[in-house]
Length: 310
Image (tube, rainbow, N blue to C red):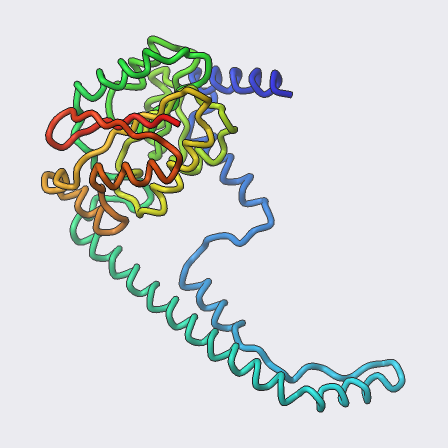
């Protein structure tokens, strides 16, 4: 089974690089398959809240009629006996549901206000994809390549936010069959694939959740999607990295001090909506929680590389 999976993966790599299956098409195919699963779909928030409010009331007037002789009388007797309790209980539940729906409506309003505010700050930005970029640093790329050169190159190496610089292209030239990247924007993902790079068009966390245990020989973590995100997202990514890294494989985290936001209006807009960069000591705490030893190397005043070892 494992051999078959590896053969299928090699064929998929060939198809991506040949342009037969662009990364964006593969991502859309995955979305279509996910829609077939029996789960709640995320559509319009307003519509979902309307449906929730419309179905939230619990009525104690349960039906008591029956076609069997005597059952109707029995049901009505039971209802009369416990009706006082059911009425009291459902009243408490209805009150709780009413307050919960009201809170969700208030949160939806606040979210809409934030989106409108972001649109006024930077109208050219799209909420569906990462926007803005941390400044590229050549020394950072060299540091990461030096660290990865110590790997055995027996398992795939993932480069997150592969659209930011030439790191994936350089790594691909050294390990053409193992290096691959993750790019959230479908246009940039297709462009990278057209240049002969192996990329996945998905969010970082989604991709990691679909990787097998101990399946990666190295990971380069970075990008706006990761740094400008809530703490729960950062924790989830680190937890998945701990799961998917093979024994002895390194995780390399490229991150920036929060002061870097001062140089970018787009990054400030992202941080206001989703969350912002955290300090190096904060990253160390999260890494320790996930089971890593963190060793940080300062590249310049704002850019750092933290190696994550189990």
